[in-house]
Length: 304
Image (cartoon, rainbow, N blue to C red):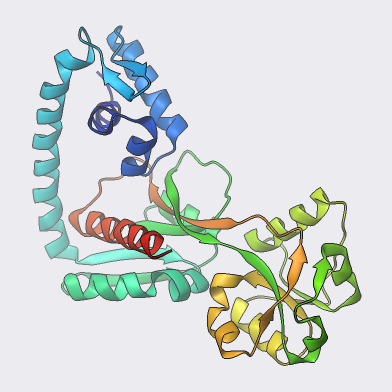
């Protein structure tokens, strides 16, 4: 018996005509989509797609023969699942969302408020923890959807979609270091100043340390902090230069409490991704939330 998930990938590729677009629709990686198609073709012993300059096209003797039937069957199954999910939502009315405190504040707050207005009958439970803990909660059915600081190690227990927000790590300072405004600095120049960094074992700190190692630089923090908000406060008070995502300091930068240093080379961007438990039944409440997240992401990208 062929896994239904393979048929869902097959229909997505047929609709989109592209592996990449199908991956975006399904919140999985493009290699995962490609592997699923290969697996389905192997199980059915027939090629389903032809790769052309226009994208992926159904084969006349394979894909075209089964597409309509498979699509109809999946629609019937999805309808049945949604009807059952709607009943469950009325009974439990709970959506469990996992993320760090910073992701909730700077990335998800507006989406959660909008979701509550649209679905006031759904109880929202916010689970605040670091990305590795959120992953474990997803795998043990203690969380319905998680938002993770990327990259994370590959885990077969979760399905990780495309990034929902790009983060650009920059160096910032307060008035105590006003002589650095407009100055062109090299990464190595920062060794002369007290540096504030997030604690070890965090994704942000690992990204910073890996970046420094790639350039043969060694930068040690004068102070390690456990939150971005605390770092911003200490930097504003003149305790040193902080390294944090620009997106988390926009308010203080706009107010003139902090200023961004011009440091070369710039750190590579990081991102935040949305994760779901592998092979979980996506309820109506959860599907509505993930669609709202994706919609807000697309609207934010249009504004840029």
